[in-house]
Image (cartoon, rainbow over all chains, first blue to last red; front, side, top):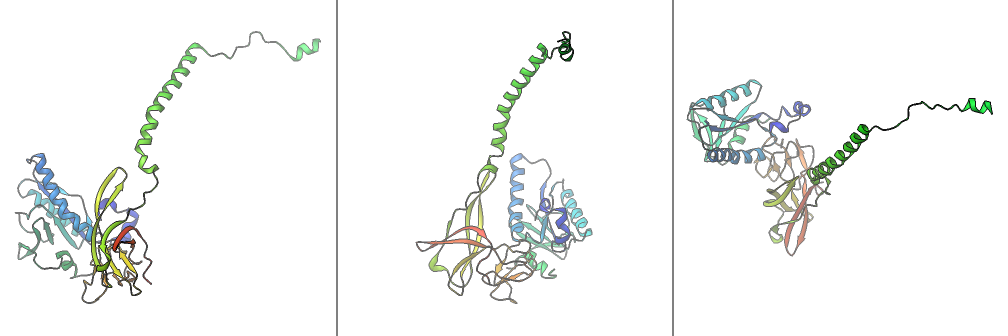
Length: 144
Length: 179
Ligand code: FES
């Protein structure tokens, strides 16, 4: 579900079930041409939408992180992910146009890109190759 | 006679209730202005809320599957429907799980879990074979969509029409097959 579709009065009933946050990250720095920005956002949208549709009842999409030069954008995503954990979120997924070049962060469980899904293994982003959806695999470690 | 005069006194200097030229002009101009503004604004308001004034459209039936291919084992079929939301029209991909009940009645279930709206799958949990299973919080449903765990209601169903050997699906309604 999207953050703007959650009524304040409903949240106390849903909170226990919505334990996963989806952070869209467009990895822009501002020097892109308008059509490049559009293409980048479309890439992120295309990986986000199937996730949102399939897991609408457990994944909360929050506002996107857009800009950052060099690793700054990814640092921003990592900070947002950590702050989500502080408020009790159990799993954090990032929808991105590509895997970040910056360091892996413990706060992000999964990155979903147009070329596949990536999980952290020994401090590296490793492509997910099993038939089960990586998010379901993550959840299977703790069904609510 | 003199008494009559006393009862109906004449007041020759009382102020007369008369409109001044200034008042007349401002009333006339005000009325004309309001009339002209109404002529512009009312059609704009009508135009803006036009979709709300139209009666709710009936969902058209869409050809989805061949009747001969439907068995008691639910199979997922995808199809496109035109969704009109106010002024926005777009083609939306939909999915239905189509099967025949034990009584031979054909039905098509919505894949949207009645707990919090995730997408259910058929036979995807080895611990619960031949059931619909929701990956989000483990809701389970019978092949006819009856809720077995977590979800508060059975899966919704599509209206079904069979014509010339094909299955057509229409709008979504509450389940009528699950018992
Ligand atoms: S949304 Fe299906 S079990 Fe919660």
